[in-house]
Image (spheres, rainbow, N blue to C red):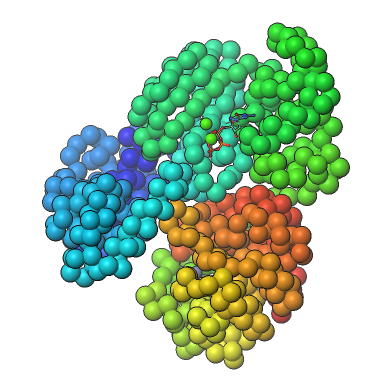
Length: 581
Ligand code: DGT
Ligand code: CA
Ligand code: CA
Ligand code: ZN
């Protein structure tokens, strides 16, 4: 059993309980699924070594769920799961992937229309059957069709941030094969793209066939497309395809460079080699037109650094390899000094159980400190987001008192950690804010965001965001375009006008690190860097387990060529606060 398979069962349990309107359990199972997905070790290994007790150390897993996982791992029947599945025998994960379709709706769709999977759903919607259902109507039907369309467009690409722990786990397992010298995941994963099409694994070994055998013996594999001596292609149980290639040590750098891509970067690099009368491919960089046998005639290939250097270029970080100007910059020694993965000192957007977050302010502070941060800003939602229990002025003032208390406590225990006061204030249709200015003025950091009216015209969306920026209390625009990757399109907005207004008003634009937001996107980050508009990288955590997503936000910033100087929460706190006020 892989982590992904177990997480899938746990998530289905959450959805099944939700269909049954059982209280609390859906949330508990969802949390457990997230905990399992975030593991960078195999749960079967954890269990084998230390039994059930160790399972309970996984975030989100308590006594009850640990017992059920044990049952699953022992290959026994998980009775409650079987019982619920029998009642509603549908492909839940497939249906729930459609924007706006939740467990309760899935249940009705099955009971009334016998809809079991995506194909059934599409057929019924196109035939107008869903519009006729009570409590559904034409609007829901249209929304469902749009959701299906959107899913198809994403072409099965997966959000990297959600699946990265699992990929790292696989990478580690392959690195530990006795015959493997080096192993690394290349391709779009190494370039840290927002979404990935597949997993490209590269390894060096003197015994490639042994490596192939071991790879095919892993429990993650669903189907083998092709098995060769040095290259094997499979479909994993998580639905992703994976390729593994084994190359000799002498070619590692060249192969890594080739399979990291991007394709456009490779082609441009190869052209540079050709201009010098050389040849570049996945085996090395060669002088002379004819490729001689390895390692004869090879000038570079063992490391990537060697290849770039030989071609007269500075080393280019994988996140920049998209052929969007990085080769020229590398030749002119003008590459940016990218923000590092260890540079963040704080997090400027976090939600707590005062609204729709999972954890208390104190717990968030504790975990953030453990994570290595020096401060966090608490930014719960405000009152017009009623479904999150959004705060009004009174609640915000009360929260400020609570934060003061927590800071005192931290101080007394000699912690230097600081909790700052903030909010994620909702921007109304006309650009107005739903919290009074005199309360906003008391907050350390005021973030504002669009959470509704996603379909206004480009001019209207731009106008409302700029109006919010013009409020002198506003510091940051959170997740500017409101997109959710694979689920919701961004609002239409005039980014150049927004950047100009940000510059004029001194407003920060956020890079929201939540894996399916990554908002603003890399092109916009580049524009901000060029304009001198500062940004922040925030986790948008709704649980203390989400601080790890900051890494994905940093990757996004790096793909947008951002340096430490561009990201205000990479600066010391004092300097950051001075910039805001
Ligand atoms: P993905 O999988 O769609 O997220 O994106 P990539 O970039 O991982 O693309 P993939 O898996 O098709 O190929 C992995 C790398 O192999 C790619 O980044 C560059 C290299 N590559 C693939 N096809 C070609 C090609 O036709 N020419 C060159 N020069 N390189 C290629
Ligand atoms: Ca790939
Ligand atoms: Ca591939
Ligand atoms: Zn938000």
